[in-house]
Image 1 (tube, rainbow, N blue to C red):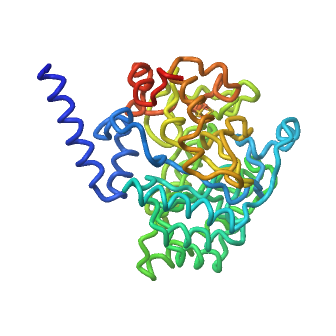
Image 2 (cartoon, rainbow, N blue to C red):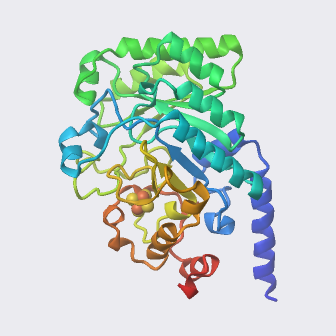
Length: 373
Ligand code: SF4
């Protein structure tokens, strides 16, 4: 046996074991700070019994109309006839129950369970109950949500703290009322958002809650003074702040979601944009829309990568099913362009190097038994 190969594989296994045994919040920090270092390459962990990343959308309704978000473009949504609504609490529990079975059988957990996809989660009155249910089933290393905080009243903040949520990501759109109106097109109460975040932070400290509050602003070409004010206002009332780049979504040929700005790095991490053929998402993620339809990834705003329906099928059957297999095969064999959503996906360019799979075609086909299909 080739010593170098054997040694390399032992080293990779050791690194993987070490990484997997770190507390989840240490792994999260490493992943975000060093997206291309220390984190074991995805291909060493495949095939996954449970997705690394699972999004479940409580609702795809939003009270903002942000200029860089597909959900904010009502005309665009009309052209594709996107359905809208709220997920029932019962459907949510069914998905979590099925996930719990897979986790128990495999001894694995989801790395990140996001109660968020296309909408504003706080519009759903059962958000706190959903988070608490997911936490009670111990199916994920971290349960997270993302909100614009405009509806984060004192009552909802208490509910979030009592639910056991691990991470809340708060999107700040501007730092002045008129700027808020420009970005969201319909909301202009900056102070309300800031005071909601302040209450959540102070209450979390008072209760000694382990909730991590991550506050971010997407830089759409702001003046430096806007970024400085964001940092000044939110550093004292957040555990982590970040200035993110604009991100592209799937179907980026339909609309330029990066607003004509020459974006060079990915949204939340410092990875340089890079052209790729094989997307890691079909191998590591799943995103359940409000109506139970399962998309392959969280940026599938047009619901074009649907691979199953959780109202009729089980999570396990979808994750290991024929549609998912077909999707993975198209990607691993360089035929991504056959999938409308993936053909012009800007988001794909932003994945960090540890998720790079372009040179793993034959390994992927072997791992997923594609030779016999
Ligand atoms: S290429 Fe884009 S749309 Fe397709 S699975 Fe990847 S992230 Fe999703």
